[in-house]
Image 1 (cartoon, rainbow, N blue to C red):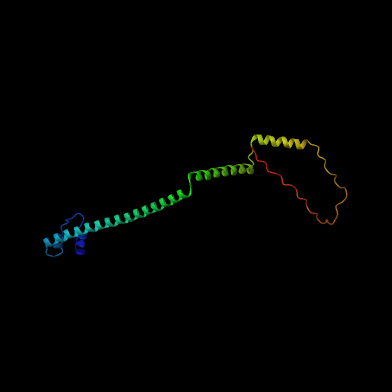
Image 2: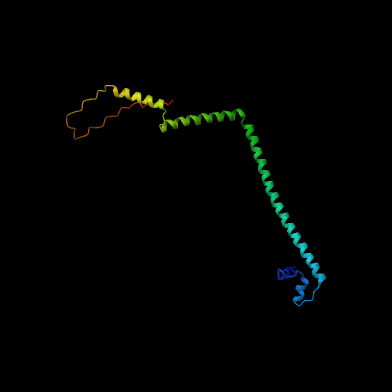
Length: 168
């Protein structure tokens, strides 16, 4: 068979594909019947190899399909287990809580970012004007020079923390 393949390769592309003439050119006596039989056997073998390659590809593809189907089965089982654990009402409740939390976070972000509406800004300006127009009495500034030694610090009184007011 290998000799036939070698003979086929030695035939020029534009020349005759008759193996007998190639053998005759090499100084061998043509055995047409035997060569035809071998040529037919070679063609059948090539067809069988081609069929086997197709079958191997089909088997590999089928194996991949089987893995996909197994994955779908496992996914389906997981979904059934989740349906048993959670009801539609439970899912709707969780979604509602999540939406409320997102809205609350958005409000906090707006407050922290300082994005105030015009109404908020007007209210703040009115409050600032009211504070600046009040007569505030300031303590007297001492006229004596400051002492060289710093007296021991007295404990600082806890001041109440200002409350954050949500913008409306």
